[in-house]
Structure formats: C-alpha cells, structure tokens
Image (cartoon, rainbow, N blue to C red; front, side, top):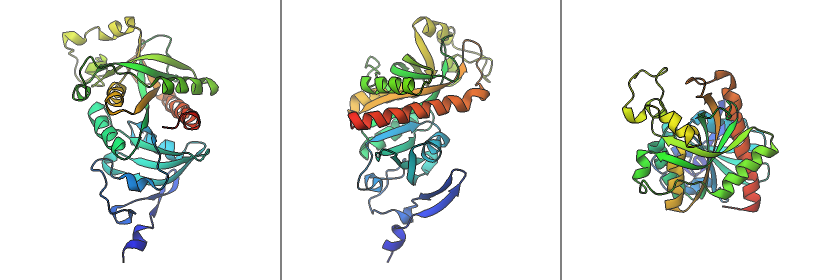
Length: 293
C-alpha cells in the first residue's frame, strides 16, 4: 500500500533550484539509515558512488550539488543534523557523493565511519583554511599531502605517532587539476588542530585573551617547520584512511592570511571556496577515469 509513495521522492524548491529529497516515508529501502548521516547503502542506488567530496559546512556540500558546472544532483539523501548529503552524477557519467562532516575532527570521525560503512572508499576533504606562510595568499588553495595532527579524535583511532598522510595519487591529481585550471595552489604540510581560536593562536579575535604557554608562539614555530596552513579535519581523516583502508586527500581554500591578520577575508571567501570545489571536481574526473576507487 505504501510502495508507490516510497518510490516518489518529494520535490523541494531551494535557492539552487528544484531538487528531490528522501524523507523516511519516501525511502526506497526498509533497511534503517545510519544514525548520523541519515541514509544507508541501498539509498545510493544500483550504481553507487565510491568517492565522496566531504565538506565541513553543509552549504558548501549544497554548492557542489546545486551550483557546480558539470554536476547533476540526482537527489538529496539526507539533511539530518545539518550533515547534508547529495547523490550526484558528473558530466562524465560518474556517480559521486557530496557530504558534510560538520566542524572539527570528532564530527568528521563519525561521518567518515558511516560513509565507509555504506561503501565509500575515496574521500576528498573540500575545506577552508588559514595560511601561515607569506607566499600562500588568500584565495589560493592548499593541497595537504600530510598533516601535523594535534587532534584528540585521531588519538582514539591510532597512536599519536601514526602517520597522518594523504594518498599520494590523490594529492598529485589535485595538484594537476589546479594547474590545468590555472588556480594558484600550494602542495605541502598542514597543521590540523581541534580549536579555531586557541589552537590556532588567535587572541585579537577571540573572547579568550589568555593562551596557555604551550600555544604561545606556536604559529611561528609551525611556520619555521614549513607548515603551510591551519585547518581542523585533515589529520584525523588521513589517520582514519590509513587504519580503515580507504584513500583520502584534502584541498582547502585559503580564507585568512595569518601573517597579516587573524580575520577571515570576506572579499575573497567565495573565490577561495569556489577554487577548492573546482579543483576537487576536476581531480575526481581524472581519478575516476584512471584510478577507480
């Protein structure tokens, strides 16, 4: 009696156009959705994606799905807890998932665990970051080939000494994609930390003007260690990839030039995010053609 309604996703009008969403009543399987991401493997259809672009912010995942050239959104899988997920098809015919990790490593660790459970085997984080090197300008992108990982969630997954390294093929694909698109890019080391303010030595823009001694001067120390940027998820993602057995990469648009200011550059924010998205999509097209996950 309910099969017809379950097979008919409901249209929803958004600022990006009309899309379809799967409410629990309209899901096409009786298998329960995973608790946090809000969908299960069967919801991904007969030719499910094995690659996901993972964003910290739901609006960035939505931008990939609804406003990116060469991408068709087949349906919204879930908007549970703000962890928006979209089933996409590239102009090459390749299926792709755009998903949301939420802010920080604890939330990312939950989402990545569940994405792996539904069959995702390649994850590229599409994020934002703050540069700590003079030559890494706002609006450019940083491609992380490894991370200095100061994240508590990662320590629940592997020892502190366990390397937090991206898949080299993904890193090269991201770098080549940026070059083809003529986008200013930097390939290097990232500092992945747990907090936006204290952990990134923000004082001027923070409500907390006191930094523990161990964090005072940390940005200059990282700069001298040739670390390019601060962000909050890549280190844990890379460690999970090593332990779980999937491949991972990370490309982040630079929103803040920390050698000059703690503040986010609002004028170049959209450009930085758009550049990261374009690089990730171009890299996925190449990887799916030459190295399927």
